[in-house]
Length: 388
Image (cartoon, rainbow, N blue to C red):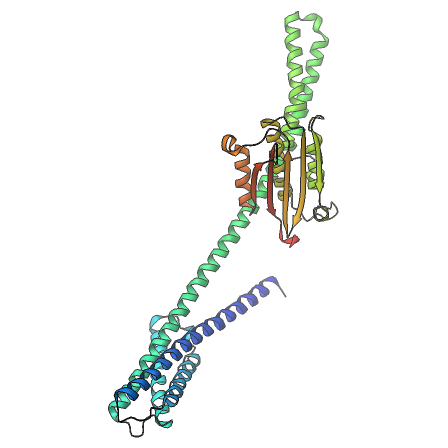
């Protein structure tokens, strides 16, 4: 079966479910209200006749209630028969309500006569009972229609919100993919084209410096300085910028990328990476369930924590923990630098931007003081449907 046929069948099935739910809402709401009115009317009639009309020694409450029940059944039956829940125009809804109420009023009076509520009813009694039955049915069916309309509006709003949420999610995914593409392209450009050009410039400068005997000392010193700066820019600035844009080993998995990140820290800082079995399972290079965007975002969390540890306190150790619980990746980074005090330090701007980025992906971020020293940065990132 083609995808279009499957989609059409799903739409038809959904419409049928909606129609059944609409019918249940209308009939159930009308029946509950009508039974309540019927019970109240029967009790009121019994009390009035028994206490205010001395000539009436016996008032048939059961017969009255049974007649009202018949009216409710007829009301619901007519609403179901005419498919009142499918009515869309206001006048068709009014016709359905009026027709069902009229049938219920007539059936109620007939049932009263059959069940012996009245032995010889007068025309005034008949008219009063038929009218009261009609009003009972009209009010009940009207409330049922109102409940149906409320349900339909709520369903429309809910599905519109769901569609909007899907559109937003698709837009975010598209932006993530475009961001990754641009990052990769720029990183490759920095690492390849720009670095190659810098290498060529360095080679030409080397040739010039080989002929330094033809230059005066000041010019030779200036060229040597330029060469040194270009070499540092090539080895440090360009390479570091390339890694920031697209971390090393990201294609191999989250764990290899984090190991490469932590491996670039100074030897004076002790690092520890703890990865749960659940994370290793989804980050298996042979069939990773983590998307590139999810890996990149998790690496950004660790990068931000490491950057804060280096900038805001002389940390001597950084501990990173990865865990996966119910499809949510938990990233925890602790350092033992200066104690983070939110009241005076505030949230670093990079952390605030990262928190916004995580919120777009349905995650959240927490930056709190360490137990005794340093800071504790935690992130929770819901992963894709493949992990559910």
